[in-house]
Image (cartoon, rainbow, N blue to C red; front, side, top):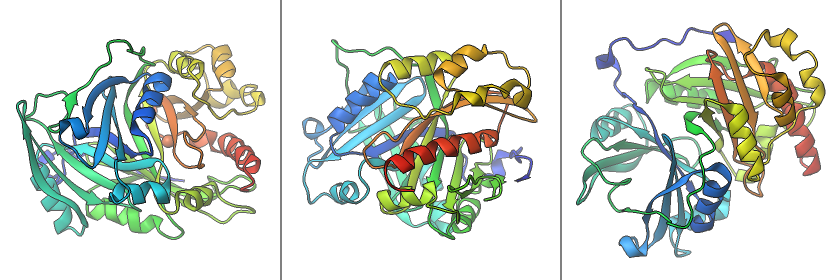
Length: 376
Ligand code: FE2
């Protein structure tokens, strides 16, 4: 593994694409009403805003849900001739847009398209009684896009076109999820460096960590990964490419079932992973389990930690340490029937890395699931 220090951009005037963080993650799904209910019930999101025929959207319906600073949008087409329907037919339910908050959505579009990004949405001003927002967008890997959201002049519930939405009979308790820590993309064979270059040249990101197939391979499931970070470190996009192993790489299984490149997992931050995972599991979120032997020599491997070992072992929470501290993490099983998108729950206690020490135990757990699906 090669590690370069994360170069934070000390002078924001030289950052041509200042990002204030992830604004929201938008999923195209077969039934947005039910998907919103799943994320509210199982993950603890609250109803926030709705767009659909009743608000003037004739072609689709969207439900925005929120938990602390974390916002998901579940969108579904209302007609088969809507291109969203093609997206769902091809990919199944999945992430369409990683929306990034910017101070100036026009400048974000101009700077990125001038550097070679393919435009997805030219800057558009959306208005309602609560003010205006400017939105633009560019394509990234596969059919995934980045939207740039400028909302400094908007005070409504979510965005113009949506109306505030709540259900007086149903307000699920939070599971303590706070914000998006990172979003990982799976790209095709020999495509990782293309996308590393894209994030460097088009979006001004830096490659802060690299893992090759020596780092990330078990007997079967090999992959390579590079972590791209925005200049200020607020947005991190690791990129995975499959690598040759004895049998099929987990990334290749994703590419086969997603029918192309796309978002593999979204990592959600918590400040109390034991409480969050206990709540998520009790509400039916399924997680990957490592063998309990993982815990036998855990403290020898990672050194002293603040948490009691027993609840970590009971819930299957993984621990890893780097030079700056440690992190606790756990990965869900895929949240749809195709073995594609899943979620990571992560609590950072100083560590800025991504759990390399857990890759082997974790990938063996993934392979057991792959084998059960007959895809290894
Ligand atoms: Fe991750």
